[in-house]
Amino acid sequence: MSGKSQRRRKTLASGTGVAIAIFAALAATGLSLTGPQKPVKLDEATTVEAPKMTDWREIARQALGKGKFGFAEVTLKSGVLTVTGDTDEAEDRLRAFEVVKEAILSDPSHVGIVLALENAITLDGQKMADAPDAASTMGKTPDAKACQTAYDTLLDGRVINFGSGSAVLAEESKPLLDALAAVAKRCETYRVELGGHTDARGNATANQALSERRAQSVADYLVSKSVPASLLGVSGYGETQPKDAAGNAEADAKNRRIEFRIVEDVAQ
Image 1 (spheres, rainbow, N blue to C red):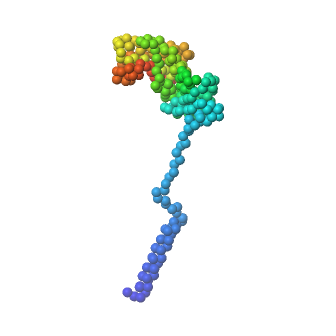
Image 2: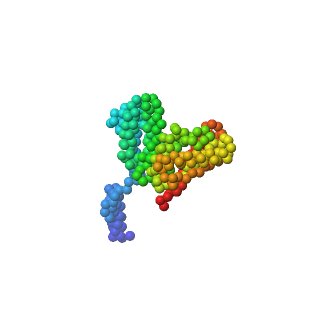
């Protein structure tokens, strides 16, 4: 190989080394020959802020504090916000509940979360017969789901009672019936079936007839509270659809019931 060729190869090798060094330097500084490049960050943590949850109990407690109702406390369970406590003044009992009700209803985001408001404040140690208010918490234009939820909330753990073996409504059930009537009037575009059920004691044919009469008694009461009769359907199921088949007294109590079930949108 001539001396000239050897010099050319050395020059090329030297140039290649310089180019490699330049590329390495550019890569280390995050630059390229085509312009600045945004560094790639691997495994970069992404922070997503969780939505803030409203503390409805705290809102109610603040309202009670402002009203100086120190005797009252608040619980929230299964969507029912309950005001508890004891006072010897009937007016204070009502006012304490009203300030809580106003505080909750003033924030429309309560709809679907706070399903009912209950005044469980005792009066000088005496329990009152108030039923939860599920009509006020439904929002301006309740849909079928909201209406069914309101009925279910009121009847969760509560039953409409009758005289033994009769269709005569028990007096203590009327506050609950009034609360159900208030919901029915808010849900004026939905037809609801009132389904009567009995326990399995006695004659099945007699139980069937009794379940029908009891459902009709409930419908008649609701109509007396200005619920349109056209919104109410009546069915009796007797002992055919038990909720609890244990056959004991506790199961019988669960099986004797009136159920409210939305069946039709009469506005369509």
